[in-house]
Length: 319
Image 1 (tube, rainbow, N blue to C red):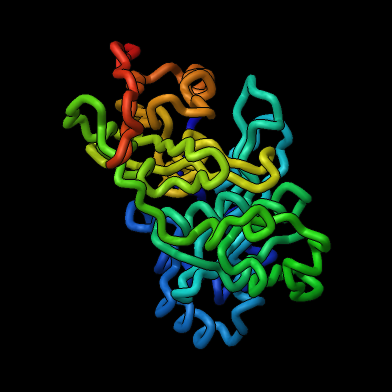
Image 2: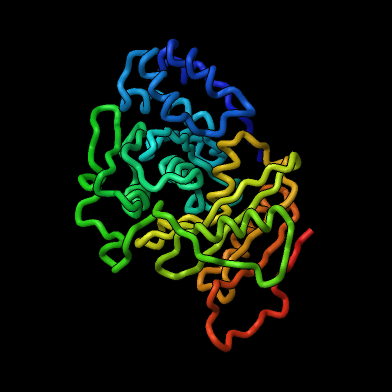
């Protein structure tokens, strides 16, 4: 499976105005573009093209759909999230050949992960061609400011809370904050390791959102050009809507325009004794991608429980 920066198709251009496509081409040229349009660029686009933010986001969602990797369903879905900063974040659906469709990333989830990895602590708008599925509504409801989030649809702008009545979220389970709120867990590796992929995975694990299990985990992907792409585990009050770190990292890698063939190494860091081990799932997905070298390591928090035993084989590498 490979992926690369998409070239807008005729279908995309028929849905997004030609004037917008001309201006957008100045922003989205590879290798600089990584699925983000800054707040300043957003204001310039709206001024030059003469449209408001919701309409701009809807038109951009058709461009984001060109990033979709959908070898099973063939349904190219794109989404655009607007962060509290005013930046816009691309997201696209992803599927994996040989894996069940239950293991996939929806465009709404990808856009939210993109915002999260880039430091956003809340969303104001999310644009998509059709109403999000139930899983995506639940995933979005986990965000810290879900009550203020609206979904931009072709026919209307609808509060997320209208689309998900009688919702279950972190506050209902005694959790303050929510997904996208700042997290740093003070994790450190059980055994020193200077591998860039492992350090990227550790940094991701430290920002992971796992308030229900404390199963903090992150994945770091080292590319042949030395770039490291890291992303973390994100839980949902409705467990099925949780996102694994390998899903999140591959979604980001896709938006960055890299071919999976350029992966040099993949590392997973998770807490010792985790309730939600990510090893098997990660290796299963990597098998689909051609089995790049994989390292699994464990981390401890700043105050490990008294009497906690060491893991003899705290790191294992597959080649």
